[in-house]
Image 1 (cartoon, rainbow, N blue to C red):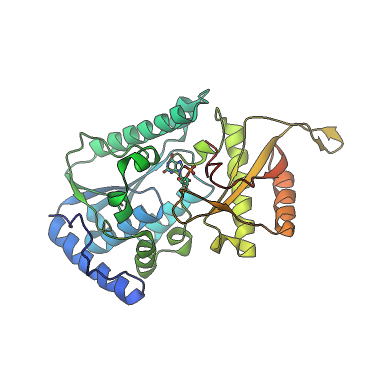
Image 2: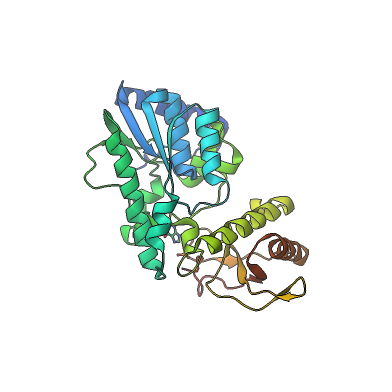
Length: 327
Ligand code: XMP
């Protein structure tokens, strides 16, 4: 019992709360019929798609849904905490939270090649999820936040972007309630389900997370500095309204230090590089013009508040020739 592979030509684009509620009602009924009294497992990353699926399924089958959130230690500041707060505390979901930070950091120690880093993160993610799934009994279904572009986009484009997919040997029937929706529709449905804007309007975040923004071999100290600097960037973008306007913005920290001065003493630190881009499809991207007063404020806060950073730089390179991520 699955939804069709092709979006019916008469399916209305979900742009209003009314249409979203209608969709939610239909899907709740469909999922109830599909799942009956069985259990469903979902890897809940906290991204828009998996969050909307979780919230839809909680509405349909409540505690029969078991969400697993794997914190790989490469999340942005506060993200895993928000997943727990929204789903466990507010929505009373059956949520298993796994802090696998150390496992990932140990495996990544000394690895500087970007594709190797991606592979390690993807493979370990599956391993952690698989181990958890094996501990659970009576799971019949696997829910996924597949959306329509995932189905229509060619595999070759998406391949390196998905954190590896799920274990091939997992023999579950799939539950994919948003597989016919476009991203903008997923957001409208998420809002109608009552999810906070911080989740529904979230910018795209690569599966390997901060792992590909802490350039080269990751260390705990540099990763910590990156997370703090990134949080400051997000805070300042929220304050000046840029977060509603810019498609994707983040900090990158290369594995190099430069000389600086702090408290009258030599202070060697890493540079924090700001990247803020606009795009429709992520295949090309343009640069957002950030007002100088905002840049000064961000620079001052990052260099004063974040241990280990002594310079702030701005990446002005469109795609092409620079890709959005540095790795
Ligand atoms: P690039 O760097 O290729 O990024 O210009 C285009 C978009 O894809 C995201 N991205 C990734 N997403 N896993 C993901 O899930 C990845 O390994 C990955 N690499 C890049 C990037 O953030 C941007 O939105």
